[in-house]
Image 1 (spheres, rainbow, N blue to C red):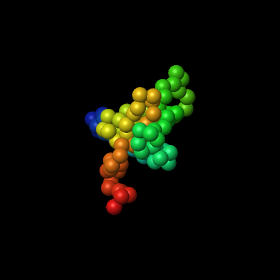
Image 2: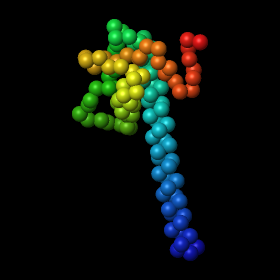
Image 3: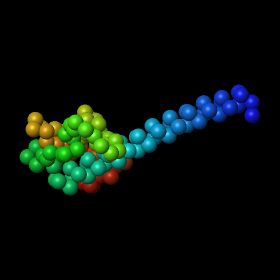
Image 4: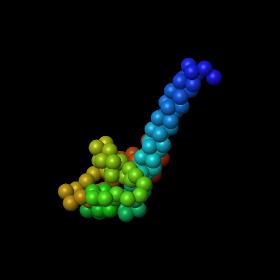
Length: 108
């Protein structure tokens, strides 16, 4: 193979690896979001009176193991007003919010 073909293949391989890594990170964040919403539904945290503390949303000094996307995803859920936070660090699902972009509504 010529040097030009090798360089082009390496560039394509690098681009492919980058795209794959972004896709995997997005998939993991999506799963983390589903996990958070499922956890809040299971705890029936749907209003300020039933808000709950979530152990994975607390800041930790040392993180061991695989990367945990839940704190970052929780920030985005709060930012987009899917989940609300109270002053004591308790979370609850926003009432009347469609929780899935796929349209799986439970009230219809």
